[in-house]
Image (cartoon, rainbow, N blue to C red; front, side, top):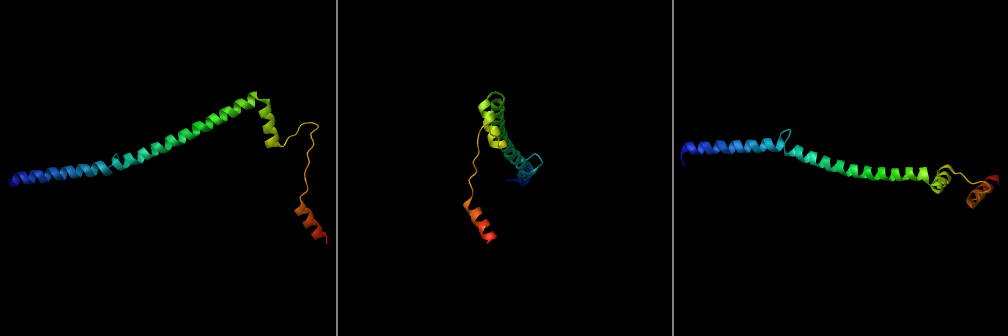
Length: 105
């Protein structure tokens, strides 16, 4: 191989190596590509979760608009409401009664 060809081959290899380094580590290189790809996947997963949450909330809204039994159950559960003529029985806690008796003695 002639010295001129060796110099040309070495220059071509150096240029290809420089191009490879540039592709891998530049602002729009492979490292950024992989980062953007993982970010895209994370956002897709987050969007799917938000879609499910939106559907759940939509169903809840529809039930609150149209289902009196559901409205009643929410009022009972979250607001502690009761119907007229309902009685609430609160059992005494034995542990509390025993502690109070000991404190009095």
